[in-house]
Image (cartoon, rainbow, N blue to C red; front, side, top):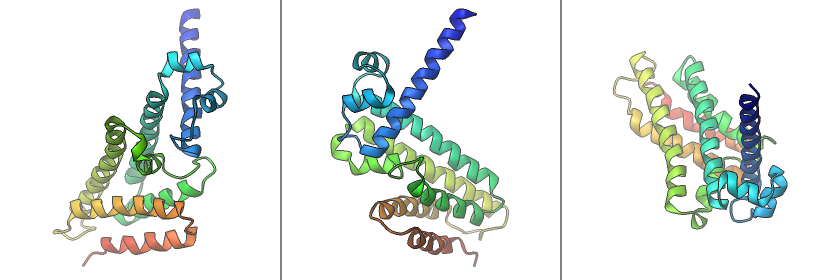
Length: 200
């Protein structure tokens, strides 16, 4: 019993430290984050960081895995909960906007930040970032296809193309947010984007 409890405690500590590292990368970016910064954020010594997570790049990649899991849960929850395609996509774009302005998610989307720092990353890291965007597009496409089957959208509605457009729009909104666009301006863009879901 004691060994099991110790194992759980260690796992919890590692998860907490990884979450702290994720928020640090989120706030400062990859290149501006030092191992000393990670020591301060996680409360771990340098040797403990290396032994537990690996070098700086490996730590960052682990935070991307954690971040992707969180985004997938958010996106999946929105797609499942919304009664219509229009509401699902509106809620998703609103969530993207809210992410930028939330104190809990400094700097907006961690994947977008990673893409903008692409010169700092190897191919594995770039592929991890691209993987989330592919997942987003596929999840949106599946929800749009369900909308077609349920009669919300026209039978010839191009789910694949529109899913790609909505994915691009969500990324574009995040980049514009980083350029200090106001919430009101971003929400206006979101509403205009949703016009592609109009049923002829």
